[in-house]
Length: 248
Ligand SMILES: [Zn+2]
Image 1 (cartoon, rainbow, N blue to C red):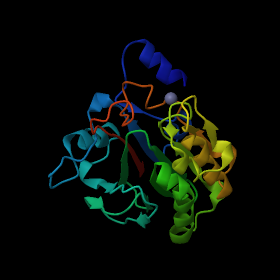
Image 2 (image 1 turned 180 degrees about the horizontal axis):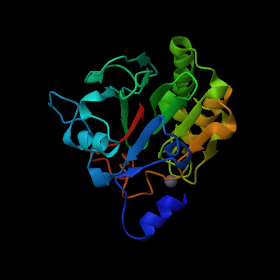
Image 3 (image 1 turned 180 degrees about the vertical axis):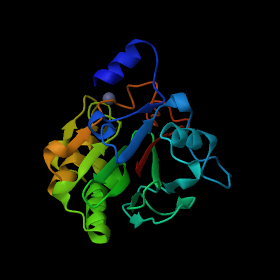
Image 4 (image 1 turned 45 degrees about the vertical axis):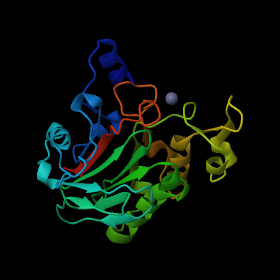
């Protein structure tokens, strides 16, 4: 995107990346952190998941850090509704809410953040989609959870796919590739390895769930190829970036 490449060309990585069509919406706050803000990983042994880096991300979006709720992110497909601030929702990879100013946060390092916004019913959802969550259709489960709790109609939804590892860089073994439709998988140059396009697979799940194709927006950055983003595959040091979304 033009904004991203301009900023990178000038040597300055922004603290937060955004999807321009969603950034233009007054009723929505969203952002994908870069490593400029530091790692968004939970501090091992820390009592509070609201780390200094996560607080800084909340402040970038002018959200009170105390209002941020984090999904536990266990590479599952459970989606939970949250109505009030709490530290962490364990055993959960997706969150939805209709509360203004309540921030939903997931962390990732190659996995895809998938955010959803319903401008009609005024609700948001967010998922952490690695290969397991994607194979389990977590993006569609968030769509279904928004419909169940808030009456959201899929055709009203706007969706955003955050930075993640691209379909050229993400190489997986056959047993992982077997979970996906052939269209998302291509043989890699390395024997017995396959290139898996998680971004396209998540888009497909959203569209099958009824989200309109022209209302799904993708951030073009690949985590593996971008030194300013956390990538477990490129550098498995435990660093994470985060996506934060809230109704405004
Ligand atoms: Zn890539």
